[in-house]
Image 1 (tube, helix red, strand yellow):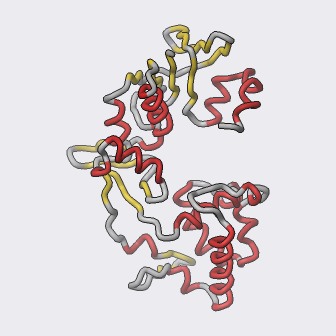
Image 2: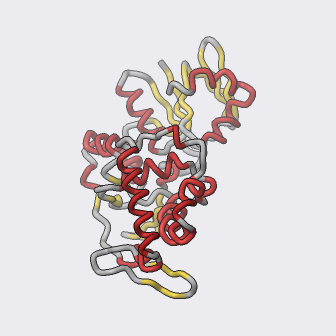
Image 3: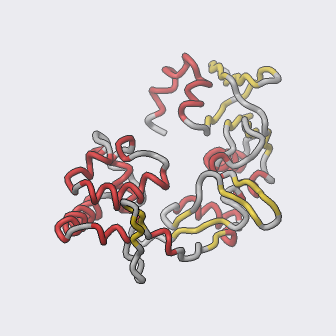
Amino acid sequence: MRIAVVGSGPAGMTAAYRLQQAGHSVEVLEAREVIGGRTHAERLGPGHHCDTGAGWLTTFYTRTLALLDELGLRGLLIRPRNVRGAADLLANGQLYRADVPGERAAFKLLSPEERQALQMYLERVYAEQPDGLTIDLGADDRDAESELASLGHRVVDYVFRPWFEGPFFTPLRLMSAAKLRSWLKAYVGATFYQVDGGMDMPWLRLAEQLEVRTGEPVNAARISAGGVELEVPTGARRYDGAVLACPAVISARILGDQVDQVLPWLGEV
């Protein structure tokens, strides 16, 4: 089969690689001029780069690490240096430094009662939450801020906002409690890595084995019984199938009024 994969981020590149392994003819269509999606790194000069999106991999990304092993790319992973500032806290104009063992500076601002409440909450999450970043949909009926409110505003403001709002660029009030809980469990015992040369390096290496067209935005898709037709700036291209490995809002725009055709089976993916 001739299959198009829309998007060259980790999901798109992995899908294209697996489809090609299965014997299909695959084209990756990427709207931007660069490969890697949100892992893209800007090269500033020899030996210098800036990760513009995703900043690390971790041991609980088991499938990603397994793929890197398969591709012989595990050697790209490097352990970040232990930077003190990551655990320091600036609050109310005062800098609170972490203790030598690495205890978060935020704990200095909490009362004994607040510390105990935090510890009890974390122990409960660790006991209730499934392993492996599994989402517990029972906690998806509320936002993370509501989930934490009973712990008090200082626990929320000094512990959880720096912990989650910075890395995920999302306020707690717009984050699902289910996501918060899954990550709290996953953090236990995890090791974090950066990637030598930039976070997009594994996907740039994988692109060498695939047909990737950059600067090729997909404007629309028309689904029919015989396959799918993708509208690109140079005209229409027909494929036996297509994988949309791009943000949901872009996928919805590409599908247009055909979204209803996708919804019945989307939940099974």
